[in-house]
Image 1 (cartoon, rainbow, N blue to C red):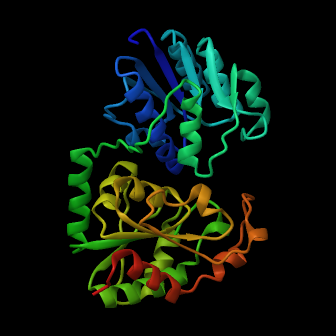
Image 2 (image 1 turned 90 degrees about the vertical axis):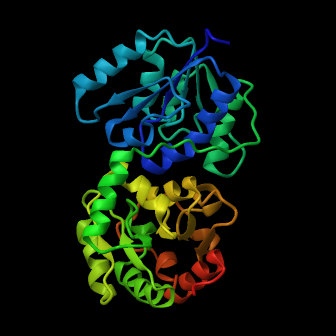
Length: 334
């Protein structure tokens, strides 16, 4: 129906945006002629740049009140018929409401991240399926959209890939694997000393060199991994989100905790080994059944509370367990 105009509200973060892509792809399949726009935080815009499923991307500057007001006004002028809020926050729900869309779909009060945000919706959904990809698909299912395909449309900018190639060449990196020690909350991260020991063993057994991926503010963490690894040292390269995309796409494999780089790599089809503790992999884990999860947590240790210290469940994961998981995922390390 060409007169349909959809607004997607998902402001961030990296992994959350990746988990929303299949729902938007399914929406496009169901409404090939519709206008589909997405409002997103500027930091994550490279994930949507030149996305063939979208008509336009409206960028929000998180720190600017003026930018927020301008974006809200811009949305208002688009005359959307339906807004779908995948975020479940007051801010995202307000954008959906202020857009003027007569139909607004979001999570129920029980499941929204900020429960009162559900008051802004005309249709509240209580997903029942376990994984976040599937839960997001249940939001568009409220429009009658059904799919058996899970597509993650992503576009890698050639200039970003060229810049990454320059940085890898400057470090003497050929074929490589990626270690990503960050993850927002320390309680769902694995210590840098373990990543360093893991790099030594994987480099010895594969003949490959590792690249340490890190987010803004995590340089010290990446350097700690490099110091712990010793020789051969993993490469620590300063990259942005646009360059992270070709990095994880080209990697032989990626080892990370429950984090954006892990989910981005999985979306590209790169082999992934996920290290999980407090957060449940059935909800936030790799979506590709071929990928491998390492987790020792007991049921009572499952939580989404943000902790500032390494959790016992993550500390219980050994280097040997992870090496075995990588070998299982690849079939061989030789």
